[in-house]
Length: 218
Image (cartoon, rainbow, N blue to C red; front, side, top):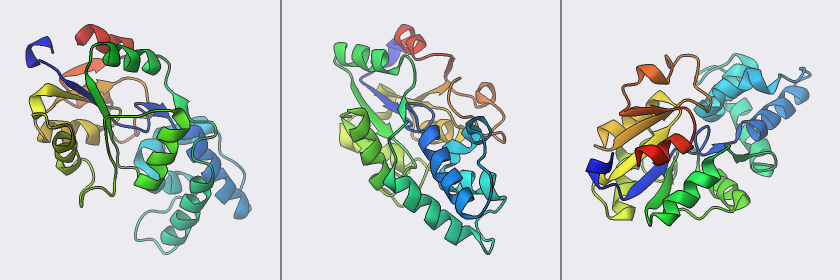
């Protein structure tokens, strides 16, 4: 990656930069409790966290967009999550050190997520993070895997695509980064939706098992 004259590192949020699954699972289990259902263990819900409300509501209730109950369950789930989005959320081990190294090298960094702005801002503030750019699920008309969010990040950073690398724990992250012309890195931590095939199959430019591995690639 040194050949690309890298100037910015961009991250997916849920499952890549931060472990948001505990607070997402707490909101879902609160909703299940209201429905008279037992709580589901975090490890059962974790793989669905990258798919946001859609994935978690499906994991918790077996319903999907278009089903009669879906909209009401999703709305209540999001209300519960908005009340407590950053109680048990934390950076993944090694991420803080990676961000410090990015800063030391005078590189820019940012977040490109499908998460809505209202939740993203609360999580970033709760974690004490100040990215150089933030692009959320409601920033552009399209969500990842569409390249529009990635292209918006490039505009905000005033950088060409090949000077940026994008890290993600979901196939859609890699598809979006590639479509925008960025270098892509799949991360072997995170949530890895069971239907995604696993990060080794996503045709990313690199696959890393821990945040420190990116420092060596830089």
